Image (cartoon, rainbow, N blue to C red; front, side, top):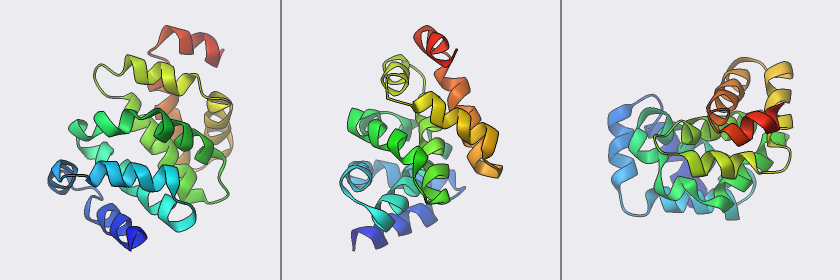
Length: 154
């Protein structure tokens, strides 16, 4: 049931700012999706990552709050090396979107402190195609706004 709900939110929020704003304001939607990423596995994690990526792409309000959770950010970074291409694309997209938020300096430092985040993103830029490459490059550009991350990127 959780997987079906996450998949429904992912599909409803795809390229639709109105749906993303409405869904993001619903009680517990963002929190439950974050929980699905952190606690779930397989298809639930993939659908929840896709939903969060979509919700944060078209609605700036959805980029803060629950999406700044250290456990969510840590899991998203780990998912950058997942075997599933969609999981990698959505993880990079979520990191790109969340790191683009106004006042996200703490988030930038948190993401940048994660083990192998820059290596994984750079790997996606050099070896990835399409959305994987675009999302990874966007995440790197946003993360480089923090001086400490500029040193980490090299």
